Structure formats: structure tokens, C-alpha cells
Image 1: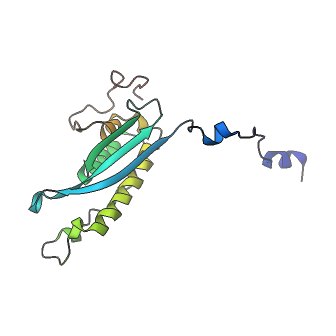
Image 2: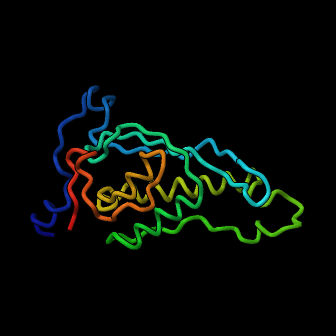
Image 3: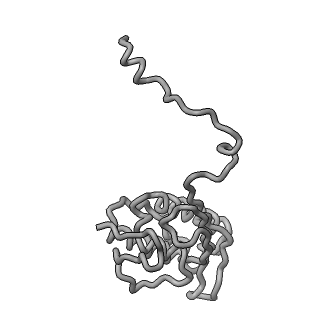
Length: 172
């Protein structure tokens, strides 16, 4: 084997890590948790909402911490907006569970605790995959979803929102 082949497979020399590096804040982080599901309403107007908590130090986000309440249909809206207006491959949402919505079931259907927890985990995986994508981080719909109490479903996609988020610019 030649010396150049060996040199190409060697590890890069890195400086030793000190305690400040090991235990200091990470250089860039984005944490999103879905928690505290609450079922509200009665009959056909009954639905479950989830708290979406975000913490970050990424400069593209206006708020460094936010917590909003979202329901499954809000996640569907975000997925549809990203599929329509962005260049990223959007992962699937956890299923709609149509069979669980049939009347005369012997259980709580979509309001059963185990189903709500399974859906919560799926929604958390979905939003973390989306928000971790650099191109998705430029999308206004993601910022609205994560940081604004109410989602403006009449917003203009791709419109610059640098007036509310310093450092943000639209990607053409």
C-alpha cells in the first residue's frame, strides 16, 4: 500500500478538548420537544393538542425559546406547505388512524392514551427532521409553526420576513 493511501485514511489532528469545550453550550443547537398532550372538545369537535417547545441559538430564528400548542391538522398544514413551496423531501407524518375513528368501537379510538403517545413520538420525529434541514429553516411556514401562537394560513409563501427576523433573507 502506498504512503498516500495510508495518509488519506488517518484521522485529522484535533486539539485536545478542555472542560469549557466539553461542558460549555454547543456552538449550534436546535431542540424541539412535543409534550403535554391535551384532549379538548366533545363529540365530533373533540381533538388532541400538543405543546411544541423549541430552544435554539441558531441566528435564523427570531425567538431563542418558544412554546406553542398545535394539533395534528397543523402538522398536516406544515407538511403541505413545505411540499408545495420548498425544495426538500418532506418526511411522512404518523398516519391518520382512520380505523380508530370509526363509531361504536370498544375503546377510545384516537383518544386512547397509548395512541396519543405513539402519535406524539411520531410528530416529534417529524418536526425534528424538518427543522434540522438547513433549507427548511429558511421557510416562513416553519417559523410560524414553531414560534407564533396562531398560524396565518393566508401568509405569502417565500415572502421575506426579515422585518421580524434579523439576519433572514429569502432563498430564491
